[in-house]
Image 1 (cartoon, one colour):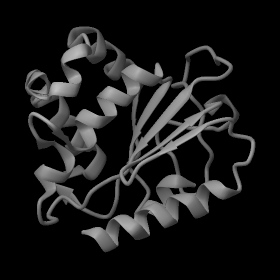
Image 2: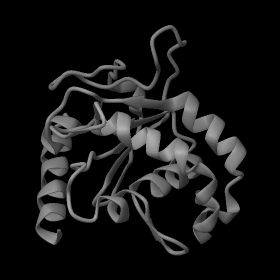
Image 3: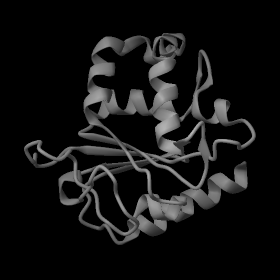
Length: 175
């Protein structure tokens, strides 16, 4: 697991080194948080190499903003639920952490990455977001989320979450 996180971080850093127009980056082993996202492009179904924008089709383009990329996790990987959900009350997995970051950073977009795995006919990002909505009320078990109004955060997340269903690995997600 530690080796995977190191290579994950290295892939993200390599992919983002060329994005020197970004004003601010907050990077963890599971996330890439970028301010000035408006300079990037993000269609709903991003293809490898395409850039990201902070709006969905039909929405008005806004200058600035923060984008959060939540890396995919292989659905049959050992400890998937602990990686993605965590262990309340203090160990936030990728999804609770994404909700917290989206709220704190006033994110314009949260992108759920994907990969090569599928479960129940769903890609990683589709399965992961379904897991989030199915377990939303349990976010209240995480102490860092006690200061977040979860009803408002859910409305925000439903509005700004974008699913990547085409990339196959972390390096492609971050490009």
